[in-house]
Amino acid sequence: MSEYDVTEIAGIDKCEEDPSLIEVTMVSRLKKAPTGSGGGNDLVTITSDKGYTIFEAQRNLRSNAPRRLFFGYVDYFLIGEAAARDDFLKYFNMLERDHEIRKSANVYIVKDGTAKELLYSTSSEDAFVTEKLDTAKKNVEFISNTKETKIIDVSEMIEGSSLIIPSLTYADYKDEKIIGKMPEKRLCLGGYAVFKDSTLAGFIDEDYARGYNVIINKVGSFPVNVNDETGKLACLEVVRSKTKVKAQFEGEKIKTVVLDTHILSHFPEQQSHDNIMNRSNVDKMSAELSDKVKKDMEKVIKFTQDAKVDCLKIGQRLKLLYPYKWKKIKDDWEKLYPELDIKIKIDSYLLLNYDIDRPAGSKKE
Image (tube, rainbow, N blue to C red; front, side, top):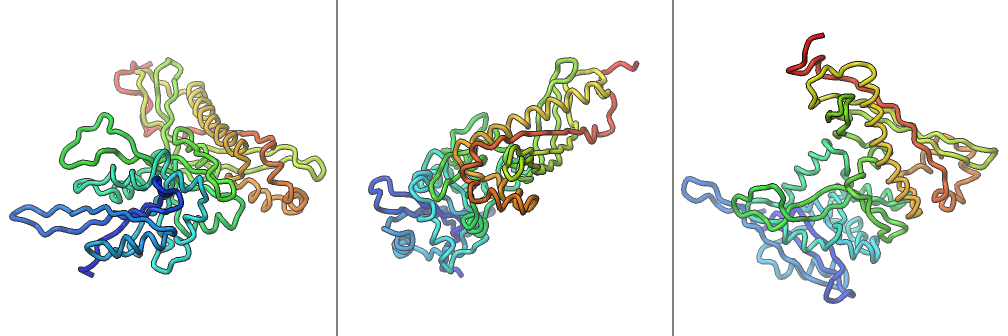
């Protein structure tokens, strides 16, 4: 195994210089031996090559590499936006076909750039890009604006009626002190790339992507700032969410779909000094939380209807709930979905206030 470099991430792009070519970029690292009393840093190597197919490009790359590169180690495959807009299936086919590639590897779409540029600008000896992706993937449970999607998941979606893949991008550092040999840019994970057929239709922005997670029941937790009855900020943490799909029919025609969402939240912080744990204020904060989550869900629904893509899997859920009526509308679903009246009903409940009735500094009544 000593002859192999640990290659954990690979990028696939439509070549910018020659659109007829495909460019593959691989990031590998080699553990350097410790020197003196200190440990050795990893040697990070980024290499890329081109070909008319992905297989040819990666073989060209591997044939010229100083050490052996192996696709079987890759945990993350990044596909550039231009490639996704060109024809996603063209750039994905080898990932599900080639025997070296593990089908448990994660897939991401690079928003506003190429996979090559992202890998070059977010990698360094002191900050390996896969470690940042590993951490970001785990931390997403705190904001619920993306989800893990593996090659096998993408293959299943291709067989279905919609395709949606998490996106990532890169940006300048903000409010961060750079120590050591840090990369030029920071990695930003969040949001989704939505496809119609095999072409990128657009992105669900990370600012409201949690609305998608709420609809498809993939919520870890996320914070929502609200105003209490004193006008000061308080923070509620959504810890559980469940959305059910209901439909109203007129005969065999579908009239309305209702997304019935139930949210449970905790109360980790308030900025006022007053005792605000009373029924009227709890109801006010819960209602504001519901309104903010509802707006995110509405943005997601509007995006999918404008793109004419049911990536919310509403059709699949209707098929399970109303199998007989679904048979009557399934052939027209692609035309029905963009014009469908979709309503949202949210019930929000405050579950826990951490056993604190009065904040520090409040006056006893």
